[in-house]
Structures are given as structure tokens and as C-alpha cells.
Image 1 (tube, rainbow, N blue to C red):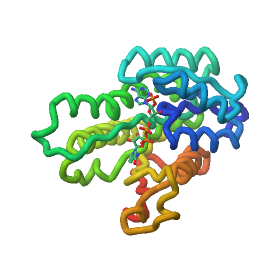
Image 2: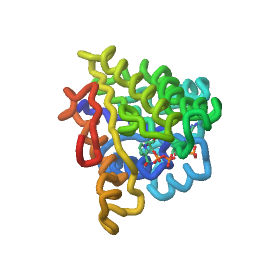
Image 3: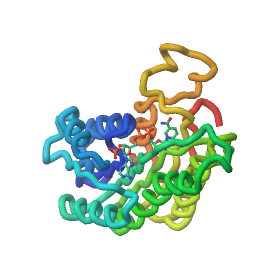
Length: 237
Ligand SMILES: NC(=O)c1ccc[n+]([C@@H]2O[C@H](COP(=O)([O-])OP(=O)(O)OC[C@H]3O[C@@H](n4cnc5c(N)ncnc54)[C@H](OP(=O)(O)O)[C@@H]3O)[C@@H](O)[C@H]2O)c1
């Protein structure tokens, strides 16, 4: 690791995983840029983390808009002059209907939240990430991307598009200081159900802390050679 503090950008920072991740990174010497749409939730998160201005910034953006991603990157450049890690945790889920029962707009909504936010963020932050000696780009996806279950088509299609973007990026950055990787989880276990109520259903669930520990490792120098991976975090491939 170089001697300068790394700058970690978390989009979707107010999600349970975003919070766990911010807590995990604060155990290290980093600067955080925490983004989501809701300033009130971000302010609560800043208080919860006791995040000082020296440790990081919060700002509200809707990353379904290309200009918002550009503005976020400009803010990070202005505040820190660098970006080492970009993590997109923006989510949303839709299910319970057949392909022809979903409206075209449902597909657009899912693609906006998963694919377009990732594309806009990657576009905006790549120039900074390319200057980092250890650039990292990470998303959290789902096994549905490869094995679409019935009645979840918009979500599965959007996750597949988001994954394809990261895999193509991993090829284009191969041999550079940037890595791009995908974590896959079935269900994020925000209530500790796998421990409290173990069953075949909850056995594959993953806690925000398990996700954030994995991301933290993937951002370390020890993980510099891990690129283009789809890592299953649900107990089996
Ligand atoms: N939950 C699961 O079981 C599960 C399973 C597999 C994969 N994943 C993936 O894991 C990641 C985290 O999921 P989650 O369920 O923890 O997410 P979540 O609780 O729904 O939180 C999503 C986060 O993104 C922010 N956000 C949403 N739309 C945004 C936009 N247009 N611009 C900026 N910020 C936006 C939300 O804050 P605001 O609403 O305040 O903007 C929030 O911070 C997602 O990528 C999801 O697809 C989740």
C-alpha cells in the first residue's frame, strides 16, 4: 500500500452493507465518500459512525442520472484528489410475476438501479481509479444473474447486465493496477437469522459484516491478483 490514505467511495452507503462496510474501513486509515439519495439518512449515518470531516464526506446524489455520477467524482477529486476504491451497493428487487405480467417499465427500473448506476459511476470514477496504484471496483450481485429463477426476470436481467459490465471492465483493466470483482449473495441477512433461526432457507444467507470483510480483503494489496472473479458468498458455488 502506498503511504497516502486510500479514498473509498461507497454508493448506496446507507444500506445495511454500506454501513457495515463504512465501519470496517474506518478501522483502517482511509478516507470515505459516502453517497446515497437521502441526505437525512446520510447525516444519521455520519453521526452513527462519528465520522469527522477529516475522515470523510457525505453527499446526496441520484446515480440513475449520469450528471450526478460526474458531480460525485468531481467532489471526490476536489476533496481528496484521488479515488482508490469504488463500491456500488445500489439495489432494489422485484419479483413475484411472470415475464409478461411485468410492465416494460419494471425492466427499465431494475436496469436503471443496477446497470445504469454502475455504468455512470464507472465512467465518472475511472479517470481517478486509473491514477491509483491499487484501484478496486466492486459490486454485490446474485446467483440469479447466471441462473434466473422464475418470476424474477427484471431483477435477473439487470444483475446479468451489471455483471457483464464488470467482467468486460476486468478484461479491459487486466494487467493494470485496477481490479474489478463481483460478490454474489442470495439474501443479505440483516437480522442475524442464519444464526438465530437456522433452516435450509437461511443457511445460504450472508451477513453485511461477512460481505464487508470480503470487500475489505479484496481492497488489500494481498488481493491485487484477484480480478474478474465472481465470488459466491452463500456457502457453495
Ligand atoms: N438484499 C439482498 O438480499 C441482496 C441479495 C443479492 C444482492 N444484493 C445486492 O446488494 C446490494 C445492497 O443491497 P441492499 O438490499 O442492502 O440494498 P438496499 O438496502 O436496498 O439499499 C440500497 C442503497 O442504495 C441507495 N440508492 C438506491 N437508489 C439509489 C440511486 N438511484 N442513487 C443513489 N443511491 C441510491 C439507497 O439509499 P437511498 O434510498 O437513500 O438513496 C441505499 O443506500 C445491492 O446491489 C443489491 O442488489 C442484495
